[in-house]
Length: 156
Image (cartoon, rainbow, N blue to C red):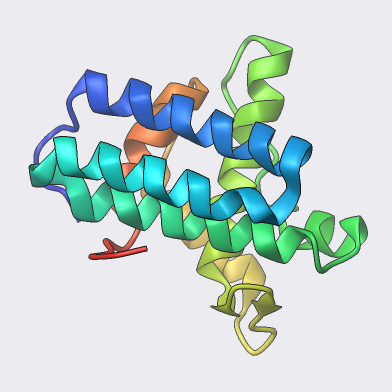
């Protein structure tokens, strides 16, 4: 967990990389993951003080994207019911922010990519995530907070 504020430039670039992950998943499917991993690795190398947090965020998002392809949409909706209220004004950004938080939640409840751990109390996990992140006012705000709460990673 990061104790110092994440620099704004890192937050903005991580947000852009996340949106690129979503777009790449839609356009190219899972085979795009290796290319995206390399992009995230390069980004992490340019910010060594935050590289664990950057790679941790990528791991969580990548695992969630893999999992989303293996479950029916209703299962993902059921998992994400606790993430309903956001203080994001713009409707499009609210949808993107909610999806980002759902991806974080999915990453939190996995045994491994593609396999949800149904032994966990998923509503409780959702409540804990919402509690840790707190009030979210934008996608950028959600990314900033996520970089501070996702488990760090040393590699992809």
